[in-house]
Length: 430
Image (cartoon, rainbow, N blue to C red; front, side, top):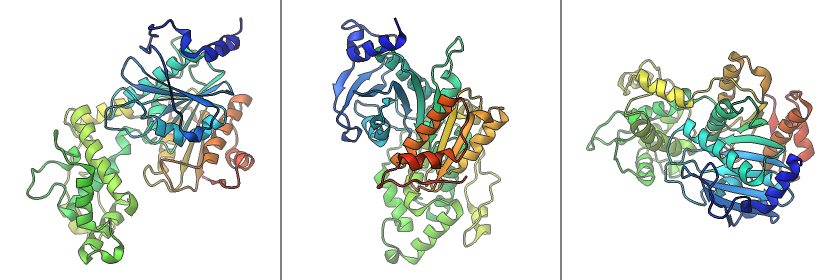
């Protein structure tokens, strides 16, 4: 009896593959049918379940399935408690994959907050659950975007092969991935906190309890994002037209952006990350220790760099915190699967320079032949064009089909074949 025939039967039976009330090895007893996002199309069935660790799993199964599976890692990290339905937005963002015939599974991860190894483990659980319920596909691909790119790259290092050396996955795709790793990915936000506080002096304000900026917030602090936005606007006028800003606000905004390189539209978002995510990372994951260092940083681009460098808050990283963060989130480059990465040249959230950092890591590990990278001229972070995703998947599939690493020109050539009138090709030379 062929594996494909068995897989087809399991796909038809769905949750009937297990006796009623029985749980599989990962603690899933049953999938419930749920509404799919309209973007995936009408001929798709969606199913949701919670695994034994508490993560919610969402599956999209095309009725005409191409026998391939996308195992998705979402970005963030999200700080709230995972809930049913949380993955619907992720599925909507990558609906073109399902419309192209791929089955798709996404996990919320077992808890909110930082933890790359935790998230990578939960991603692999989602693969196992899918295989248990719908059978092993002909091809299983890992995909992650943003922080999910870090998660997928880590998962590919930890779970690409089973204990006997057989592949669990066939290929890897990251899009706008945070491929710096943990110890190099967030220092610019620590710099932003320090530069912002030098000019604005309101986060924390003078009449509030003082704390080192690398903490994000003290443990138990209850500031909201709206509270933060009001402070940023009071100092910089970022939420009002330029003509309505006071001279002091305009000057503060100009210097903060010039020194840090952060875009005006992303200022509050990056400060929020350097506030609430730093609080989670430092207070809950690193035992209150500091992984950030600006002791020798020279800040440039302001009206008075000498005054800025003399007056800015300085902090020294704790080696134990750096080591712990590196263990969790840094990458070794020891990849064993064909890996495609795509990044928007003007990504305002994760610099495209993450690609060069990852290439250096992979090359140093002697695995450069397994990495193929592409750039687009897009300006978004959280959502690229459908043709970008579809083209990247096709290039990866070509690699897997032929066994030969495609040329860098394959992205633009493939995009020309799959693009639609409303969705132009944006691939550019690296």
